[in-house]
Length: 312
Image (cartoon, rainbow, N blue to C red; front, side, top):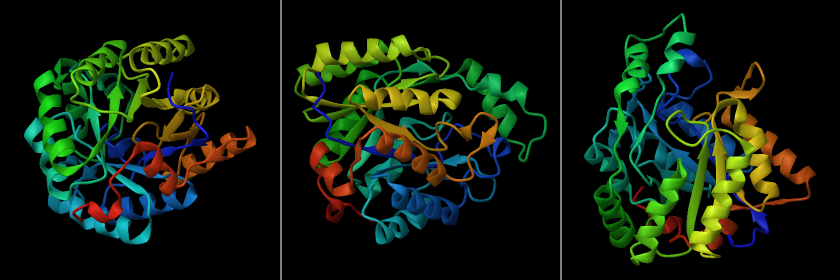
């Protein structure tokens, strides 16, 4: 089974490439907003910051390393949290575009989706009436006919270019059971080496559904495939966020929150910041008697290269 969890790692996914600005006035879009919300989330207890970039003019997801460079050094100077840069980027980006920032900045961690999938955001388009930007509605609607590409060749290339060449470790994002078997192939082949972080994801249309039985199913499958070589974490989309990550922690796992995954703090109440969600899950976990991992603990648990070996 997954390595025993004595301290719970809180990951905070700060802005992502899924929610559009019209969904929440609190979604961080500019480098200044991303920096502040990241630092506040770290101060609230997040030891990993999962980061995307946005075009500051209109909030559209971007892979531009120059925009990443406006907030990465600020975050590093202000906190010792582990910086995790996306290799998922945004739905319209090529694999090459998605790798531009990670290859330039050589972070301690990157996300890595473990399979191609239908990544469907289009139902959200029918729920919004007032749009802040012209790009938002077509962006959401286009996902009805979109495949998020992550082939075996793509995964192999990313692990080689970032992992082998720069010592980056990965948040292996598994949206379905098949993604665990994809990861198992690379582990069995010696391409991905333990300890590795498995991020089980629930509630994204196109991936495994948000039923509690599926949390157990994902955990049992990962235990069977990886034994005690892996570290297990959970995130869930939207209203499923807090109950699912709480359940995962009670099962010995780690947790991910943040405005990438849900823009709400509770039913009908928008989260005013990423730190709000971090504070909430931290309070829940500590009331359950759990200790929150600090960045130094997280680096030890995940065998990370250290903050001094990044390129920002």
